[in-house]
Image (tube, rainbow, N blue to C red; front, side, top):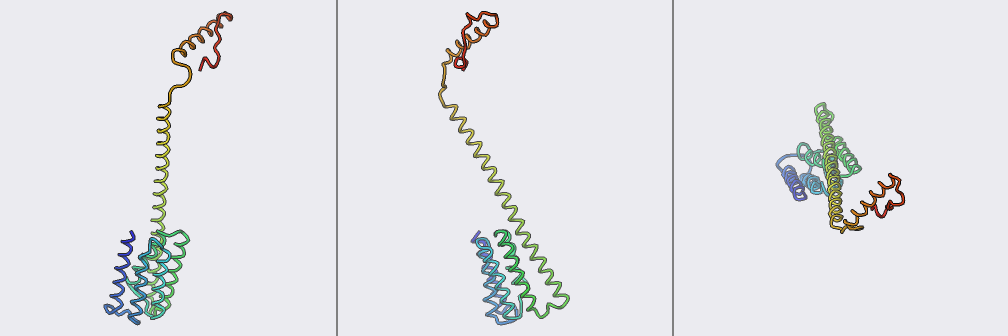
Length: 220
């Protein structure tokens, strides 16, 4: 998993470098764009091990780029790390980390919106609203994945406890079966049982004097 996360971060970092250093005119100093976009992309390498720090790096890099250059990023260079960060902090962090990560991304979007000179047009407002919706859907998807994973872990733990209990019961039965029989030998038990039956029959017929007595030890 860690290798896959590093690969995702490397792909986005290379894409950010290519977009910043001449492939596309983003606006602002290319070196500043390349540095901050790379920071945002490289932060995805810790999206599972430290999701809150990862989303902080993503949101911080995007917000600083917009604040320093007045040309906020557009397209995959911003939406890729942003959406992956939102999903990751909800899926792999605690509930408090998930809420903090969503707040950081929301703050970054506000900064990028305020530094966009064309945001007040109707089309750009629609685009910004769509970005908020997609970000929320990604975050909710991460929460759903986290809930499913916890449910599977709980079911697996329950099944393991049941299997351990059944195994312990089976071992106890086998141990009891290997124990030697204790108490009166079999022949003597038969004789005692016969005397007890005779005594009961005698008492019923009124021959109390001839009826042998059978106590609890004999009946055992």
